[in-house]
Length: 206
Image (tube, rainbow, N blue to C red; front, top):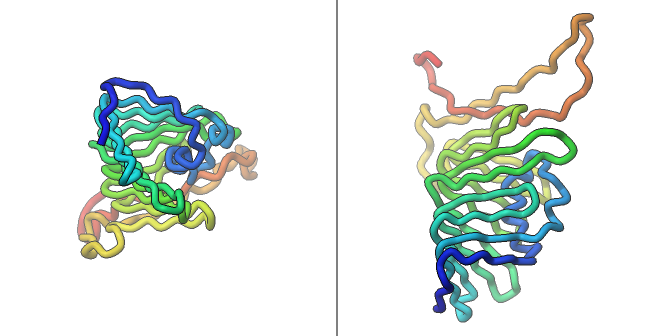
């Protein structure tokens, strides 16, 4: 394994790798032009193992691509024999921010761990996962997003994990459309995401 100098800035034109960074905000219609922008990774250390096809970025890792920005303590990138890549970001927490497409709004998110597999185009957020904008919020201990099918799954625990306690259940709140003074619906605005928050359970006061 070879180690590169600390605090090195790596300019990467890897559109496949960029799918990970972009997909973190994709559920809220991220800035589409970011897909074609150059990816830059800033880290204190980078080690790469060519035999294992693995690269590890560590120490104040910052990934940028257009309006998108991700921060984490560590990102591991692995490539399989067919050239597909899997990305695992960990931190306390992993954070990201990206502009929404065609609107003056931003998406912010966080989780203790984020994984993206470009083979199946699926993003998974683990442990205290949140996606939020000025329009609403998605929250749960586990959020999965299939980009190809545009399908969300939000649960209180990841698949295979023990059933969540009542305190970590997922709750959905749908924000109604606002009406003007004349009682008619206000002009259309970007569709807000569903707000999902832990249900405190029966017998408790929110």
